[in-house]
Amino acid sequence: MLRAAAVRLSCRGAILFEVILAVVLFAAAAVIISGGLNASMRSVDRLKLNAQAVNLGISVLSELQMGLRSPETAGPENFDPPFDEWTWEINSTPLQTESAEDTPANKVEIIIRHEEPPAVFRLAQILQPGDTAPNATPGNTSAGGAATKSP
Image (cartoon, rainbow, N blue to C red; front, side, top):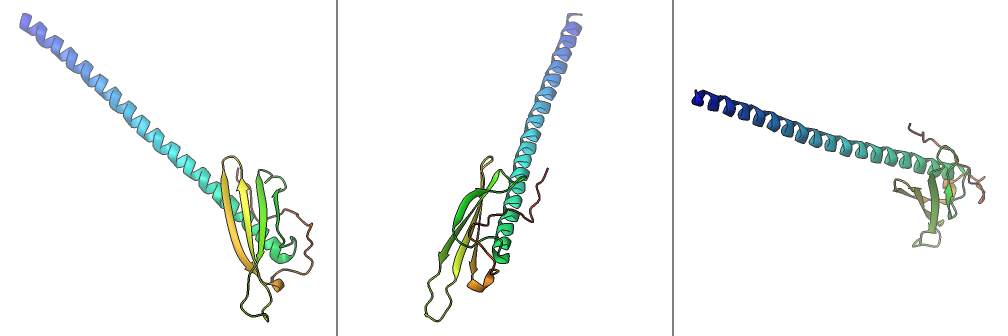
Protein backbone atom coordinates (compact mmCIF):
# COMPACT_ATOMS: atom_id res chain seq x y z
CA MET A 1 0.00 0.00 0.00
CA LEU A 2 2.80 2.40 0.77
CA ARG A 3 4.32 1.55 -2.50
CA ALA A 4 1.14 2.43 -4.42
CA ALA A 5 0.96 5.82 -2.68
CA ALA A 6 4.59 6.54 -3.57
CA VAL A 7 3.91 5.71 -7.24
CA ARG A 8 0.90 8.07 -7.30
CA LEU A 9 2.92 10.90 -5.80
CA SER A 10 5.73 10.45 -8.32
CA CYS A 11 3.16 10.53 -11.18
CA ARG A 12 1.78 13.80 -9.84
CA GLY A 13 5.29 15.24 -9.68
CA ALA A 14 6.01 14.14 -13.26
CA ILE A 15 2.78 15.74 -14.50
CA LEU A 16 3.61 18.99 -12.69
CA PHE A 17 7.11 18.96 -14.21
CA GLU A 18 5.63 18.43 -17.72
CA VAL A 19 3.20 21.32 -17.26
CA ILE A 20 5.95 23.68 -16.07
CA LEU A 21 8.19 22.60 -18.95
CA ALA A 22 5.37 23.22 -21.46
CA VAL A 23 4.73 26.71 -20.06
CA VAL A 24 8.44 27.57 -20.23
CA LEU A 25 8.71 26.34 -23.82
CA PHE A 26 5.57 28.28 -24.80
CA ALA A 27 6.93 31.48 -23.19
CA ALA A 28 10.30 31.07 -24.95
CA ALA A 29 8.58 30.57 -28.30
CA ALA A 30 6.41 33.66 -27.70
CA VAL A 31 9.49 35.77 -26.89
CA ILE A 32 11.31 34.59 -30.04
CA ILE A 33 8.28 35.19 -32.28
CA SER A 34 7.58 38.66 -30.83
CA GLY A 35 11.25 39.60 -31.26
CA GLY A 36 11.12 38.55 -34.91
CA LEU A 37 7.91 40.52 -35.50
CA ASN A 38 9.40 43.60 -33.82
CA ALA A 39 12.50 43.44 -36.03
CA SER A 40 10.30 42.99 -39.08
CA MET A 41 8.19 46.06 -38.21
CA ARG A 42 11.32 48.21 -37.72
CA SER A 43 12.60 47.04 -41.10
CA VAL A 44 9.30 47.92 -42.79
CA ASP A 45 9.36 51.41 -41.22
CA ARG A 46 12.95 51.93 -42.37
CA LEU A 47 12.08 50.81 -45.92
CA LYS A 48 9.05 53.11 -45.97
CA LEU A 49 11.18 56.09 -44.90
CA ASN A 50 13.81 55.26 -47.50
CA ALA A 51 11.23 54.98 -50.29
CA GLN A 52 9.66 58.28 -49.30
CA ALA A 53 13.09 59.97 -49.21
CA VAL A 54 13.90 58.62 -52.68
CA ASN A 55 10.59 59.93 -54.03
CA LEU A 56 11.15 63.37 -52.49
CA GLY A 57 14.73 63.51 -53.82
CA ILE A 58 13.61 62.61 -57.32
CA SER A 59 10.88 65.26 -57.06
CA VAL A 60 13.42 67.96 -56.17
CA LEU A 61 15.70 66.83 -59.02
CA SER A 62 12.77 66.89 -61.45
CA GLU A 63 11.86 70.40 -60.29
CA LEU A 64 15.48 71.44 -60.96
CA GLN A 65 15.34 70.00 -64.46
CA MET A 66 11.97 71.63 -65.19
CA GLY A 67 13.18 74.99 -63.91
CA LEU A 68 10.88 75.20 -60.89
CA ARG A 69 13.90 75.36 -58.59
CA SER A 70 17.24 77.03 -59.11
CA PRO A 71 20.29 74.74 -59.23
CA GLU A 72 22.12 77.11 -56.87
CA THR A 73 23.01 75.95 -53.37
CA ALA A 74 19.98 76.29 -51.11
CA GLY A 75 18.49 74.95 -47.91
CA PRO A 76 17.98 73.19 -45.70
CA GLU A 77 14.29 74.00 -46.00
CA ASN A 78 11.14 72.13 -45.08
CA PHE A 79 8.84 70.63 -47.64
CA ASP A 80 5.25 71.84 -47.71
CA PRO A 81 2.65 69.79 -45.79
CA PRO A 82 2.04 66.87 -45.64
CA PHE A 83 5.82 66.39 -45.94
CA ASP A 84 6.79 69.09 -43.43
CA GLU A 85 8.77 66.61 -41.31
CA TRP A 86 11.20 66.30 -44.24
CA THR A 87 13.86 68.86 -45.24
CA TRP A 88 15.71 69.30 -48.50
CA GLU A 89 19.05 70.87 -49.32
CA ILE A 90 20.78 71.51 -52.64
CA ASN A 91 24.58 71.68 -52.88
CA SER A 92 25.86 72.76 -56.27
CA THR A 93 29.54 72.72 -57.22
CA PRO A 94 30.99 73.55 -60.64
CA LEU A 95 33.01 70.80 -62.24
CA GLN A 96 36.43 71.53 -63.67
CA THR A 97 36.73 70.75 -67.36
CA GLU A 98 39.91 69.97 -69.24
CA SER A 99 39.28 72.35 -72.11
CA ALA A 100 38.05 75.92 -72.03
CA GLU A 101 35.63 75.23 -74.89
CA ASP A 102 33.38 72.99 -72.82
CA THR A 103 30.44 74.59 -71.08
CA PRO A 104 30.84 74.25 -67.32
CA ALA A 105 28.73 71.54 -65.74
CA ASN A 106 27.55 71.53 -62.16
CA LYS A 107 27.48 68.61 -59.78
CA VAL A 108 24.19 68.99 -57.95
CA GLU A 109 23.70 67.03 -54.74
CA ILE A 110 20.25 66.85 -53.20
CA ILE A 111 20.08 65.92 -49.54
CA ILE A 112 16.76 64.82 -48.06
CA ARG A 113 16.54 64.52 -44.26
CA HIS A 114 13.99 63.25 -41.78
CA GLU A 115 14.62 64.08 -38.12
CA GLU A 116 12.71 61.47 -36.14
CA PRO A 117 13.28 58.64 -36.88
CA PRO A 118 16.55 59.76 -38.45
CA ALA A 119 16.93 59.19 -42.18
CA VAL A 120 19.17 60.83 -44.77
CA PHE A 121 19.08 60.32 -48.54
CA ARG A 122 21.57 61.84 -50.98
CA LEU A 123 21.08 62.10 -54.71
CA ALA A 124 23.79 63.48 -57.01
CA GLN A 125 23.43 64.48 -60.64
CA ILE A 126 25.66 66.29 -63.12
CA LEU A 127 23.67 69.04 -64.81
CA GLN A 128 24.77 70.86 -67.93
CA PRO A 129 23.59 74.48 -68.25
CA GLY A 130 21.03 73.40 -70.85
CA ASP A 131 19.60 70.66 -68.60
CA THR A 132 17.40 73.08 -66.67
CA ALA A 133 14.54 75.08 -68.08
CA PRO A 134 15.29 78.78 -68.61
CA ASN A 135 12.65 80.06 -66.18
CA ALA A 136 14.43 78.91 -63.00
CA THR A 137 14.58 81.62 -60.40
CA PRO A 138 16.87 81.54 -57.36
CA GLY A 139 14.12 82.20 -54.82
CA ASN A 140 11.60 79.68 -56.11
CA THR A 141 11.32 76.91 -53.54
CA SER A 142 7.93 75.43 -54.23
CA ALA A 143 7.63 71.92 -52.91
CA GLY A 144 5.54 69.62 -54.90
CA GLY A 145 6.26 66.21 -55.78
CA ALA A 146 5.68 62.82 -57.03
CA ALA A 147 6.05 61.42 -53.53
CA THR A 148 3.04 60.24 -51.65
CA LYS A 149 2.70 60.08 -47.91
CA SER A 150 2.08 56.60 -46.66
CA PRO A 151 -0.44 56.16 -43.86
